[in-house]
Image (cartoon, rainbow, N blue to C red; front, side, top):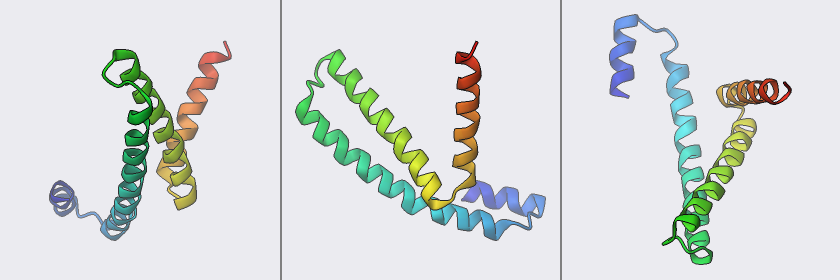
Length: 100
């Protein structure tokens, strides 16, 4: 917030209100996603042997996949255009790469 305020004063940004509304939309969403991922990771730790390398890698893979799914879903449900644009950009690049 401090960095944004410094930049905002220097550039005379007129969209300050929209940026703060976006910040305040993202904070509860981030807390909710973090809580869901924490609960999932704790549950998976009881099922996997995370003391081994393979168990830790499987845990990271599963939580990473869950994060991507939740990230895209939350972006669509909350109407966050930046998340939708990022998804379209990534899927476009992947489809071009694998269609060769």
